[in-house]
Structure formats: structure tokens, C-alpha cells
Image (cartoon, rainbow, N blue to C red; front, side, top):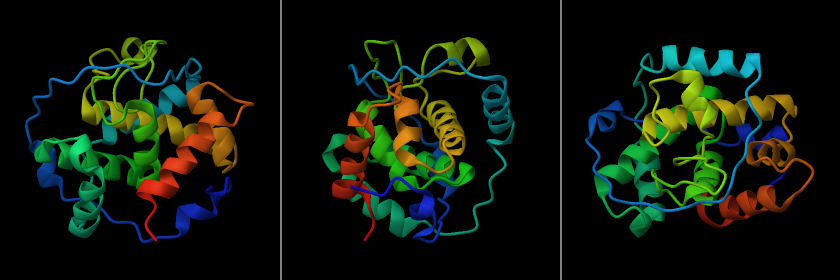
Length: 203
């Protein structure tokens, strides 16, 4: 199991993806249901963080070649997302949004894996939607944003997860439990840690 403290954040160099993949068109016909993730209604501070992220979303500089990371992770994702362009779009956006907020991209992939199994159209029994299972009240808060859109969903999901990580002062177990709406229980964090260790952690 991964440690619940903050030390893992700095264990590997940060890479930024090529932005060329962000222009690829998507046509998925997937549908499904995912693990319920009933996040608490947003505080004023969290609303402000997400709005700031939306404004800054297009301002990234492509300074580093992330081809090695993308190739590695695309191989691990494999047949779970059979379309190569969609696979690259998800990985590129996940890396970009995780790096933007200072989270390990591999942790974000583990959360997506548990939450939606990489199905952008997944809907939970609680009504959470998309790759990171963002609750519907975010659509009401942010209007035009589509919860099943890959870029919007990962932007919001990563911002929310970082907010809980900061709230819990680097305690991943509590941050993940808050994200899932299960604070005080360890089943969900342990599942994410296990998925991270077995599938996404770079040795």
C-alpha cells in the first residue's frame, strides 16, 4: 500500500505532455455505471479554485517531451480504452491537469481507474459523472461545463482532489476518503492505493 503522507509527491520528475493530442476528436459509444463518489457540496474556497482553474486552463506551455510517459501509460491502459486517440487524449489531459495542481499523474490515473474504469460516460448510483465521477452540482455551479467531457471532468476532478489533499494536510487516506464521500472509512483509499501500486506506479 502507498504511504498516506505527502512524501510521494516529489519522488519522480514532472513531465508535461504534448498539447497536440488535445485537439483530437472523440466519438465514444460507451455507457456504464461506476462506484458512487458523493463529494460534499463545494465551499466558497473550492468554488473559487475551480473557477480559477477554468480561466487558466488554456495557458500551459509545452516545454517538455512527455512521449516516454505517454507511451508507457498507454501500454498499461491497453485494451480498456481500445481507441488509440481517445487513450492518448485521456492520458495527456490527466497528466496536464494533475501537473497543474501538483498531484502525481499516476495517482490521478488510479482514481480514474477505480471511479469509472476510464469510461468518460460513466454515471454512478449517486449521479456522479465522467472519468473522475464529479457530482452534478458542479454542472449547476459552472453552467456550460459538461461533466462527461474529458477535459472539463479532469480539470474539475483534479482541482477538487487537490483541495481535499490540502485540507487534510497531505494525508492521502483522508483526502481520498473525502473525495469519495467516505471520510472515516478506509475501503476506498485502500482500493486506490492498491490500484496505484499494481498498475500505475513507476518504479
